[in-house]
Length: 425
Image (cartoon, rainbow, N blue to C red):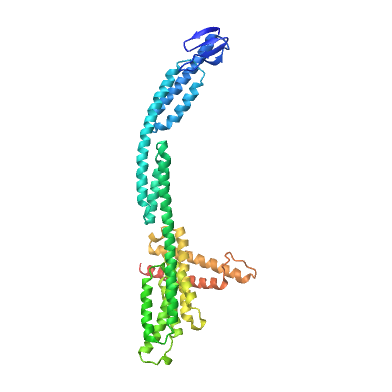
């Protein structure tokens, strides 16, 4: 080989620039002479300075970084890059610096992975203690916190990674399996209890027809004790069974009372169905009237339940008390109209309840007049147009007129309250 230019870390031969071998590597061609030998050498020396800068920059980043271990892959990539880099300089020095940093980072990562293992083992222990906990709301929050901590915790040593992940996942799976099984058992328990209530109703329904009053009375007392022993179920699910059971008990003991008074069995009368129907209607009516002016979501829901109860209980037109029916219908309409009025008012005046009483009645009166105007306008259009299509599919002319009457009564009451406030000034 004809060497035409010698350099500490390389040489030029036959117009080509070579880097001398180092660390067991052979000489490597890195470029060609385009102008002069000196210019070519200078160019590749400057390129080596770029390599030095990359190593120095990496050292600075590692020194200042909080998560130093994240730079290990960057260091490995830089080493691979330098092995093919075209430049003239002391590459062994650069690789020595990278080796030093790699040793430092691996030691740091090893410490961190031991610490991560401790943290993850602690999380697994905490998780194991929650697997069988049935306070689902509180435990669910804790489980979510542990999952977040797990995600935020770094890796452990490679040979342990699969083991700890499997342990964590198995506890999570066990927790959710237990939760699923718990609520399945709850559902089965609820179904079983409701079935027991149904059976008690059926037994009572047959027993009430017995003419052996004393034995039947003892049996009814036992049914009542059995009822108490069944266990809790949601009120709404129990209601239809309870109302039926109570009604059957009342019917029997009404007859039993006559029997104890010495009335012959053939002369004993059943509980008066008309009076029983009126009692139910009066009870529902008074409950509805007690909700007027409450204006809460709960009062609205209670009113809806009362309407359903009325529909289910007041089934025979023969026993319908028209006065109670009108009172009940007005009370329900009044509750819904008050609720709608207040939703409209609060939307416009969020601080409504902080205003003086005089201002409150002024605002409600103003909004109510506007609602009446709109309702009357829609009624007039409906009455004058044969093919009128109302804005709401549920529109009913008779119902709309009834709602206007309710609003007008409310308006009269509000005007009366305003006059009282003015007179007291």
